[in-house]
Image (cartoon, rainbow, N blue to C red):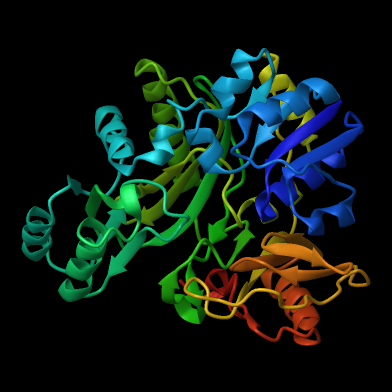
Length: 421
């Protein structure tokens, strides 16, 4: 088979690399991809992920067996609908099903309908009404832009002032444009967060192993929310009983509810969860693989990813086999200043001789044969180990001797799993 992956980040690099390892796959194309992917034999296609017409034309001309969609924006732009209308196989939710990520208020309505446990919340378009509600509830409290905001639309406000300012920035100052014209204000939940992803076809749910993402920019979960600064799997402090409960009370009812609403979901369903004293509750849903979770979860998948997707698209059952020993850990290296203003064009170190780690590229471009930074999150370094400490040692010992000027990374990824409970 020839496969096409749509997207350009570390998530798409990980998916493409896994597909390329399959004996069923002759070639993996990534549109637009990034030049770091070429190190793993992935073929780049110079087409924007928003150019549905040209992507369809490429898939037809090149004889692509099926296409995999990585990012949320093309999904919400209806790329799956357009490919299907052209008679092409594509893996991902339709535009109407992707709304589970595209609108937090819709997701809240779905959860209320299905009895899925989540934080109490209200949705607002009026700043004055939002402020009244926030002041009545008190802090800490969470303010969320309703639509897509590249992972930066959530403010966990520790004070009333911060909460009111966040609501004002979104509703009055257009901080996130149309995505912030409606906000969800919800209670702050205490507990351990984890990410539970699943392959979904209609009402069939095939869960993956859980992971834990690190959203805050700096060590000890300080600083602003980002698109993710690292991840690890497994998450030993989350009991399997909690994961099983989340599968039964969150993933399965969500898939069933989407079907009942005429928005049947096929693709990757991501539940961002928190293990509270009352059991697992949903923080958010995504309609695709998470980044950076994908870069640690997929390396643990022993089954053939290409075969899994092929069978899902052919209405055949699948079985998932995972690494049962050891762990996987990934650390994101980001541009200085991220998630705020940052410079581009930083020369990146060479990892070609570092056999103990894998590198997944995201915000990079090529200049005179070298890779330089072009985004906020530049690359992720991943390693396996029998223990978290072993994986940490592999990654941090490599990064320590590299030139990481004008970049930063957290030095505590995975350390939550080592804390006494």
